[in-house]
Image (cartoon, rainbow, N blue to C red):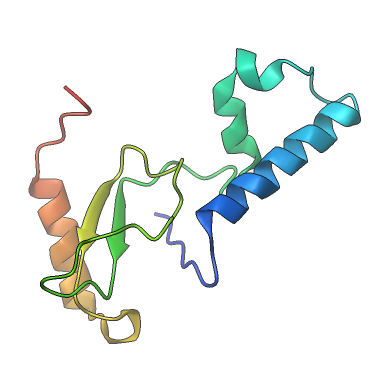
Amino acid sequence: YYFNLALDYGGVDEMGRATTKIAQAIARGELAADAPTRNPSLIYDYLDTAGQPLPDLVVRTGVHIGDVPHTSGFMPLQTSYAGWSFLPDYFPDLSPQRLAMAIDEFYDAQMRFGV
């Protein structure tokens, strides 16, 4: 299992860091200039989560009834096919029982993967 806690994180910033790293690797001759277009999944190797599996579930805390659930730019590329659970609890107050309930609800749902 992997657990990522994002503090002062921005998905747009992460994408900028990844593209800078790719450009630097190309400049050093470690990558061919067309490598990212021949293999778009290469980008995952330069994200902050490089080497980790893509998340199955993202738990977004602090979303209250009446609020429009939003991802706040969290891991935009990695979470393309992830399930999301929007909870009213703020992270420090999130109980292990409530987290377990969100995980159970996710695994009880039938995933269609765009079909």
